Length: 87
Image (cartoon, rainbow, N blue to C red; front, side, top):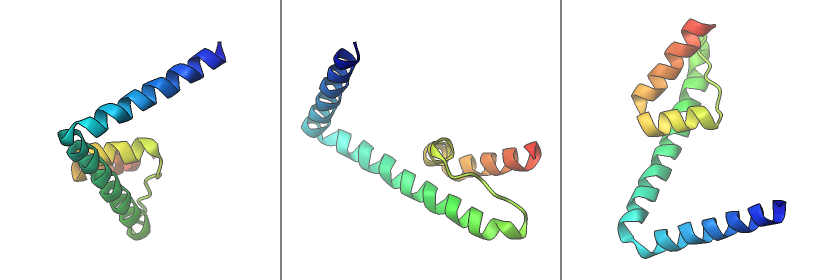
């Protein structure tokens, strides 16, 4: 059963890569998403390194990176507000 699921995962990944390589517009979406992810990491790093003065620390994990990567600066503001009000 595990072998079948592994084969299905590999076939799905290869199919996804094939579709992305064929369409030129898909690369723009992937590149934009990756750039947003890098900017999210930089923003989280800046908040975590300079936020100690105000007592702000946002955990750098996949959930926070996705939130800030998709929503941008408002997503970071939401994470900081949640961290401030929940602790």
